[in-house]
Image 1 (cartoon, rainbow, N blue to C red):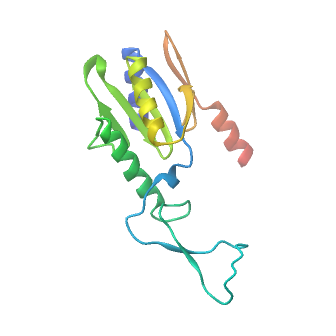
Image 2: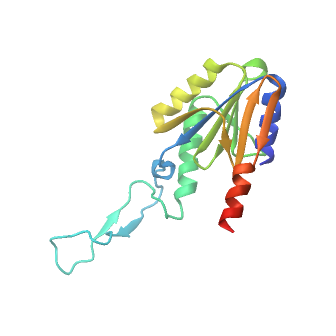
Length: 171
C-alpha cells in the first residue's frame, strides 16, 4: 500500500501517465518446477474400471499451494527480459530507466500499474506483456486496491467511497 501511494505521489508531482492492466487467469501462467499430480475431477468419466488415474500437472492451477509463487516467478522472468529490475525493498515494484525515461511497474497478484512520463513507452511495455500473457487493457488507472483514482491537471484524487459502501453492505 505504501509503494502504491508513493507511486501515485510521484505520478502527481512529475505528471506521469498511469495505466492499469489485468492478467487473465494469472496463476495458470506459472510453470511447475516439481512433479505434481492430482486426482481426476469429479464427473470425469474414464473407460478404465477400478483404476486410480491421476493427472500430471504441467502448469499451476488455482488452489495449488505453489500457484502464486510460480506465477510471480514467471512474471518476474518476463519483466526482467524487458529490462526491468526488481526493487530490493519492495518486491512487487519493478523499475526501468531513469529520469524522464523512468518506467515503474507495480504488480499486485494479477493487477498491474504502469507509470511513466511517456505514454508510448508505457504502451510498449503493455504490448510486450501482451505477447506473454492474456491481458485486459483497462486504460488509465481508475480502481486499484479498493481505491478510486482520478487524475487531472490539479493532481490525483483518491476515494474509497465504493469500498466503504461495500464493507457496510457486507457487514
